[in-house]
Length: 373
Ligand SMILES: *Cc1c(COP(=O)(O)O)cnc(C)c1O
Image (cartoon, rainbow, N blue to C red; front, side, top):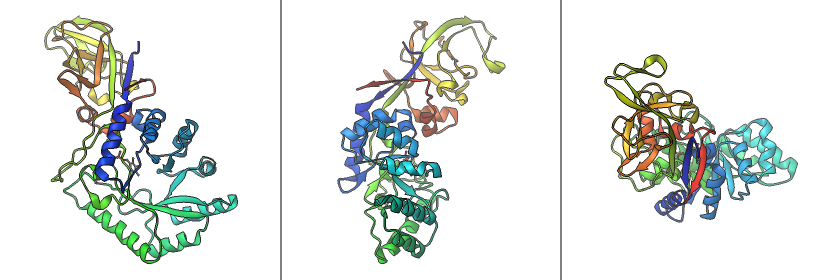
């Protein structure tokens, strides 16, 4: 009996992956992103399912994440997307990882390493088309010179990443696509033809921004069942996915408090009437957002119950005045569905002033993970 756990549906992960594949069609390679422990769904288990479904590529952030998957027996191509430290370079070769390189100096040093080892080593080059984070801002002629002077290091993909994909009011995505195109077209003219061109993560797939699909897409959030809402007038959504994770805890104690009782740190909540409260076995050390204090809600016996008082490290207090049958040991749904009542990560994040991505990634290591079909 766990205090706090998540139930991850691996068949739902498989269905979400297939839904992305159906939308982009068979000419576009789908690389599911399993970074950050598969958005806390468990990267080993998720990657094993995706490999079974035929995923040829998977995206991770770091060398460490990739090594974990290799050690778990994952043989798919692994693209390391969020750069690496000098001390991690050796492992790129040792574990057959494919780096996204971010500068022309990166290409030269990757070439040097491949030459020393007498191997050919593929890499993807990230273009900073306007995100202003990782990626090269060099001109096409300079990129061409760097790519052409490498013999062992071979350009396999050109990629970029959007800053405002869900924002249909801003023109930033169109500008980024145009900037990326100008580089790829110029390189094409100079005889550089990488096998893959890729720009899109979940949002550009889901809202049918086909000009950004290239022949390779990088969905993360959608694999776990989420698509962020668009801002402004977006085209209709093409993609339908469902959350693969439910998050649960238990009632530790139930008690009645009189009118005027203060609840929790800072006396943040004061009972306006006599109330029955439940103390839950989950807090911010489990990843429940502190911002849910006095704001969030959870589901007990199929009914919504408000969080009252502060979310503390290990405990959270809720109002169960209207749920007479609630007792110690009962299961409480933090994320998921009970009958007609449901809460997903976007709703919880909104209540807490966060985003669904940070909420999922914040589910802590202390939370047990249970796999269900
Ligand atoms: C995380 C990440 C993705 C996946 O983004 P989602 O919005 O979760 O689909 C794709 N590409 C890069 C470079 C990323 O870092």
